[in-house]
Picture 1 (tube, rainbow over the protein chains, first blue to last red):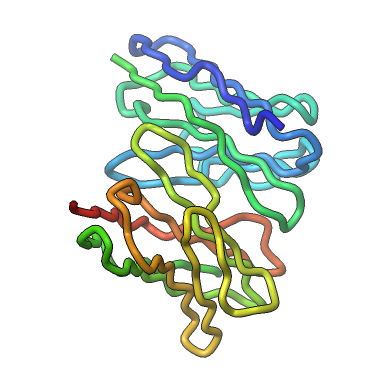
Picture 2 (tube, rainbow over the protein chains, first blue to last red; picture 1 turned 90 degrees about the vertical axis):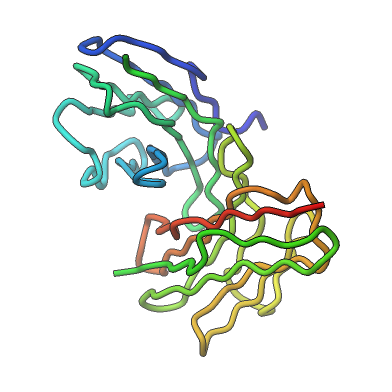
Length: 112
Length: 113
């Protein structure tokens, strides 16, 4: 299995631009999670889906952030407009039911 | 509500010495406990888990962890640390009624040659 796949691995953009991060979960996993990691705040859960349905988005920092999961094999996290304080590493993770959760390699976002 | 505490921000140990990373948790019902490791510029990698059964769980890279229900702890251990074990370690938990993992703040391990 290829594991959780994220793209791009690195993204550098200017303030005000739209950013779209992509994730392909492990096949057969019915949960998908988006996290953000910074030195200041550590690892934060932004949103998670179960069977493609958003279950808890209480961690999404602002309306500028949105996430979708149109099918079982693809999810996006969008930031519009982006701000310098959004600079972080964004991780996608997936798991099957109460089994082990696996993380992708992350997308390092830099907003100038 | 569930929570995880990793009381040490950093653990320093000499290569060849035993390594312990502490974790305590709070959760309703039986816990599902996990340890992850994060190397620089990498994602979190699964090390080991406790779901049920033997309290001593063995995982990757020679790590093990002991589940202690009375002390609500799940400390990570390695008998002989390597320099390559230097990384950030996260403990995580969810309860039977929960759907999302709650992570501790992480413990940075530095193994010196």
